[in-house]
Image 1 (cartoon, helix red, strand yellow):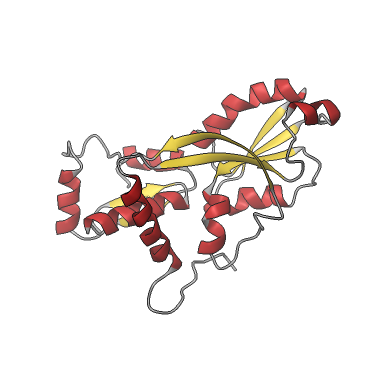
Image 2 (cartoon, rainbow, N blue to C red):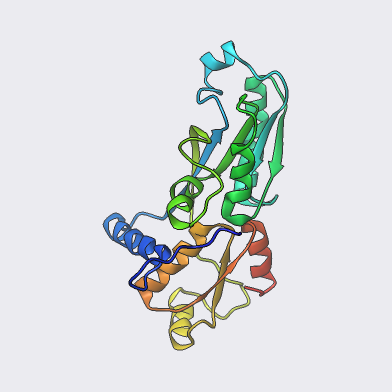
Length: 229
């Protein structure tokens, strides 16, 4: 059975509850931008890429870098920039393995089930470890037991963008349209964090929009430019 969002009593899903908590945090942090951390982990040694660990136990074969997004997205681009230097440090080729879909479940599960020998790394958004477990009824990995954190490598800013052919030059224009036409404006993203951001936007503005899930940011951008989302 595919993972799904659980629904407790009182008519409020964990998604709504999480967004409410997120809203309180944003109120405290304003005017800071919403940042999404990029996290790298592995199925084994926590100190795999530290100098001491490199001297003691360098990889004996190519290292697989699992990315839970399709090629061409921001996370994929980030890991490809990192892969060459990481390969030079470890003395082995770095093989990027794209495993998109399933709200990051597919990629994370592939790493969680890989041999714990330090030859499989995961580069993902932190939501795979911090948001998915409490949000979904079934998660095919345990973030505390199945993977080991290695390093935070970057943060990314969440942007609100629209097709340039739309007659809107400020956020106020599509916002006014969305309020007057509930669910007529759709938005898409490649991870649950995009949906949560959209739900937060709806809570703060009162605008009802429709979420369209994608396997990554690259397909979402393609749909946006094609006016599909």
